[in-house]
Length: 310
Image 1: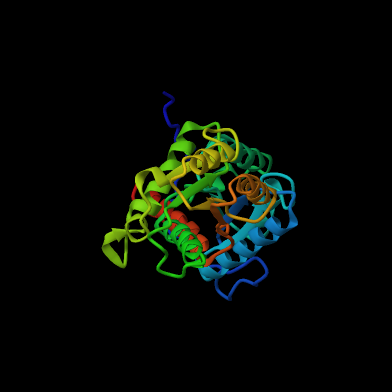
Image 2 (image 1 turned 90 degrees about the vertical axis):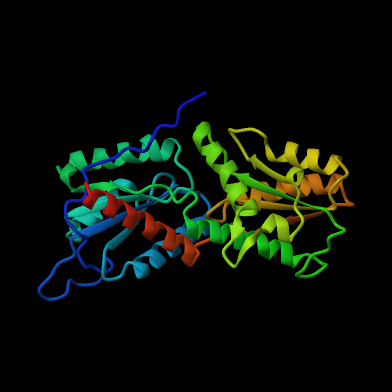
């Protein structure tokens, strides 16, 4: 069994974050922005997903207004690149830069690709000492769990039998991750599924989504689009062929719109055509929601607190 490898750590923050605003705002008199956030998205060829990423960047900038300069950039496919984003923060006067990968789980991008790219541009610009640290992927941060639950409840309440649901219709919930060759990322996805559906709700200390909507143990699955097993079509076929479920809710665990969401939707519809007696419902992706911005901000704050305490 492979051992989980932690993400790279960098030079700890040695002083509190200074008050700043976004890149276009002029420094207030008597002060100058000194802390930057390099928000790194995966990147996509789909313009919808790119637009949503930058919308989230705006949300984060608003969330951190008066604390940090936020510069979004992308690992691949689109500009600004990591190199360009880093240089923009330097031009804006950032003396310390926290790298914030916008990733759902820690896999190859978080553990090597992003740190390698950041450190390469820092060497080229002779600013390695300005790397304040790498915040963790948002994973099971509480704001993210709340948002995943919101998306699932939206789907449950959208079905034809109303908000309370119909106990006579057995419902399966299939959480779909992008998939990764990293076994730790796959394990994290499975754990997120369990916490989301079986974990106790804040407003009901004794109940979970599984309790409230009669989702039994065999009706909760984690599956993947690629690179990990089981794959979505196989999982849907297995659930549908069992004859136990009249409804299947497919919840893509994705941040933004794009080709991957479209492919998951297409695969679900292909299975649905073979099992017309079963109702298939596809949840919305997470999107540039305020809760995602809050989760990123909490990760950044946690990194700062850990480093200040060292």
